[in-house]
Length: 246
Image (cartoon, rainbow, N blue to C red):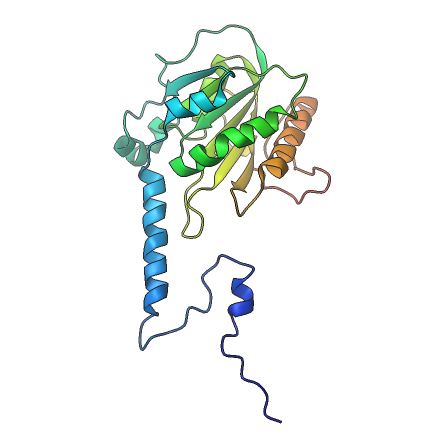
């Protein structure tokens, strides 16, 4: 009996991954559909990087939770993309005066994907808040043209023991709207990336809001218990796989 010929041996893999595999050929080039799909993904990634977060709408979504809008020293998107160092520094004119101290300060920063922030930041924040009973949480800082380290200076101004930065991750060609969460114990200007923990790939086809919130709150509790975050704090929440720690 002649063995049946499998016309597309990669079909079964495409059902379980967003990776581009087995695209095929059309002469010396890829098929037209694969080329067009790639160009569309590239355009979406570029749109995500150059997009602008509607922080007014974001503040309305957060209400009645109070929020404070703080810009970085990068005055516009072009400068932000060319000068990462300025995106890491808060504009001191926007920082609030020191006042009541808090256990936790959330910073929602645009980062490199406006789409990620607008779609996922508020639902993730609300999922975290459901799990943070008993903690003092500062007004949410909305960081414009901001990178991860921006959260150190901004959260320190609110006297927070823990900074949780929710930020748009650099878009890829399969996911343009992935959100990341960075947790830092005793945030202050000059903190190294090795002194914070990261939970990444939070989006519709990645880590869910509930799972991400479980991981974030586990790290927060352990950080306060051990008085540290970063490479010495390994995420090991029950039922969860090990998260990146850096």
